[in-house]
Amino acid sequence: MWLLVVQSLPASSVFESGGIIYRILIIMSCLEDQVSRGCPAKKSGGSCAKLDVYDWLSDIQNTANPNQIIEVRFKNTRKDYYRNVNNLKLKAGDIVAVEANPGHDIGVVSLTGDLVLKQMKKHKVTYVNGELRKVYRLAKEVDIDKWQAAIDLEHPTMLKARKFAAELGLNMKIGDVEYQGDKTKAIFYYIADERVDFRQLIKIYAEQFKIRIEMRQIGARQEAGRIGGIGPCGRELCCSSWISNFVSVTTNSARYQEISLNPQKLAGQCGKLKCCLNYELDSYLDAQKDFPPSNIPLETDKGRYVYQKMDVFKGILWYSLVDEAPANPIAISANRAKEIVRMNKNGKKPSSLGTAKPETNLVTEKLDYENVVGQDRLDRFDKPKRIIRKKRKPILKKRTGSNENTDVQTRKEVNPQNKNANGGQSRKPRSNQRRQGNRNAQRNQNKPGASRNSKKE
Image (tube, rainbow, N blue to C red):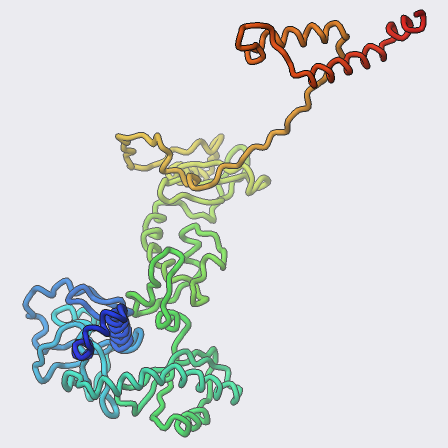
């Protein structure tokens, strides 16, 4: 269609305007991004849509999925699975019309082939009478236009829905609105801390928007996944890129990993504890099985030592005396700590804790280069501070008239610039000579010997 528009324009107008083709291409890309609910898919490379999956089995024949079940994505993180009953040749990025209740919905094919069965285990699948819903057909141009009109209504509908909920005084927040492809139904996603009676609100929505209403409650993590964003690690949020099942996170996860309990650093963009606190928790728990319990103090001849902290990777624990805790901690190895615990159980006390001997099998490799430029320093981009030194004032010494005259003569003789071109003695301008003579006369008058001689005369 866009190619026909460009071809119908006269050549003179195209070249005179200069940027008309560029503007049309921009409009095309914007419409594609809006209709596809993200970036359009590119073969097996996937897209920038939320919860996207890379199809690494795209070049292998489909054998494990004979029923041709496909994955269809809708707005944000909503996905579902359908049967291709009409044996359509579908690929990632195709816009299809699928079965809905009531009517039909429009979605984008996100995955086909054997990996669909793997994805069905991770996501919640919708069944109707024990069977998957069907794919009707590839979306027609009329379907896409109607779907585009429904997408344009979503944002103003959300703003009006929030206004109606505030007027009724309901303690809830409308986070998102998603229209069905045929504009007969809309899903209102809301967040609420308590149970909300929104029966009156549904009646108002049905009267105002003239559609079928479905209210769906989501949590703070689901809302962050639907909105998306960049985490403190610099990557896309996990809840919008790959997490589909949210596991509860507690502060014990941070304690086991020896992370400081700072709520500002432990909380994510949803306001809850970060999901990534659970990623390495099992590894830490397995590694800490070789460590003695932290609630058992160590008895020595010098006194009782209590636990302070540990380094799981190096196998070191820090203990300090009860009276001095937490100051002056002493580092010991995990084996040494277990040995002291066994001695205390037998009624023995060691003379001291000992020193730490890290139990690491890591081999430090020798680098074959030297950092001579300083490119590995973290402060290499910082501006160096300028040291401002105060200038000292020169100390002037008083000189006698005879010495001063001799100094002036020596300076004249030493300075080669003051010599004439003929090699004679240096000469000053007459004005400078007169000033110098007047100064010498005044200094001679101020001297005590000169005043007495003048009086005698």
